[in-house]
Structures are given as structure tokens and as C-alpha cells.
Image (tube, rainbow, N blue to C red; front, side, top):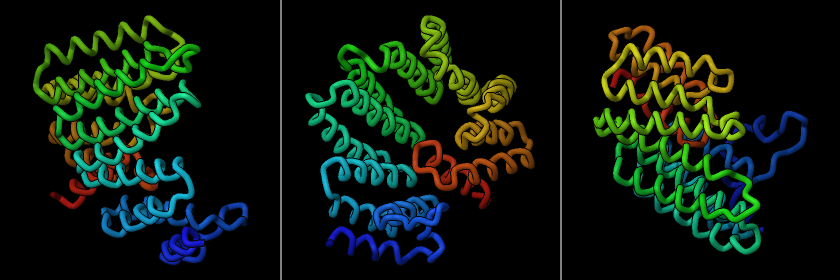
Length: 289
């Protein structure tokens, strides 16, 4: 009852229409509260959003629900570009999944790696490159611990680490290392066609990202345009932001603004690192910051 009462307070913040699902069924108080907190994070109203996330944490009915709320709180800090607090809450989620290793070993180790990578991306996007590298390496170490029969191949973690290290090297201005990691990522994809089915779409944006941050703007434009032509990338707000940054640096301010606007719109309702970055960066650009 205490859990429901606390969340009904959050639900009251929403218009009555939002309390109805599309099929006419009422939404649960918890779901209404999460929806409102996500909306608030997207509009940089972090104090209000975190009050809701904290209620969800405090009144979680079980450990899994608490871990899910910790993850949301981590991303709330991600929307603010707060690497340190994102790491703090993601570590709580990792610690929860450690308690699940015996009961569900494949999923537990995968989730630990996922959480470390998620916070690493928050930190990379926030400019904390050293923490980003540390957390990406931790994600790799955790992910490859998954026992047989593996649900995710080691090649996936190899690819993700090369992808991440390429972006980090580019941000550090180390073009040679960045290109080396791009080549490594290409080799890993080619070595495992089954894994590449789902991961190939992220390669063009890696190549474009490295070109953007190492000053090769024509190449960045080529590869990021190519990335957005891939069907499953067309609604990715982060990739739209990257192309917007490229156009801005090429002096095409009108086109850049269009892309920032599109990125901002695509990120609406998202609660993950791409949405966090797009809402933060695009809103600054659209305000003329």
C-alpha cells in the first residue's frame, strides 16, 4: 500500500488522458510514475525526476525492481552529463546482477557487462575519457565471463571493446590508434557473420565518429550519412547529432540545425545514452548555446 500510495502522488502530475493505455486499460501507478520521470529527465527537470526515481527505489517491491530503478536513476544522471553519479548507480545494478550469477549465469554476466558499457558510454559522451575506458574494459571483463552455453559470443564483446577504444582514441586525438581499432572492429565483424548480422549497422557510425573527431570532415560526412541510410539507424538520435556536428563544422548551419532538431525529436521519450546525449547537446545547439 505504501508503494502504491507514493506512486499515485507521482501519477497525479500527469494529465488524466495519460493514465489510459491505448487499449483502454489503466496504467499501473509505477508505470505512470516512470513515464513522468522519463519525460522530466528529457526536459532537464532533474530534481523532479529524481524525486520520482528515488520513490521507486525506496518502495521497490523486490530486488529486481530496485535494480531497475537504480538503472533509471543512473540514466537520469546521464541526461545531466554526470559521469560520477551514473557510475555510482550503475555499480549498484552490477552488484545486483552478481547476486544472480548462480540462478541465471548467462544472463547475469551479460547484464553486468551491459551495465558497465552503458555507464561507460555516459562517461564518454560527458568527456570523462579515462573513466569511460575503465568502464568499457570492465564491461568486457564481465561479459566474457558468461559460461557455456553462451548466449552472446566472445566476438560480440571483442567488437564492442574495439568500437569503444576507437572512439576514445579519436576523442584523445590519437588518429593512428583510432584507425587501428576501426580496423580491428572490421576484422572481428568479418570473423563472425552471425554476430555481425546485428552489429554491422554500428560500424559506419564508428568510422564517421573517428573521422569527425580526428578532423576529416568530408569522410565523417560520408560515413555518417551512410550510417543513417541503414534502416535500423534512421531513428537513432545520436547518429543524427553526429552528422549535425559534422555539418556545423563544415559551416552548413542551416542543415546542422535541421539535424539537431530531428535528433532532439527522436530522443523524446528515450531513456538511454543516445537519448541523453541528443537531448542535452541538441537542446544547447537549438538555444544557440
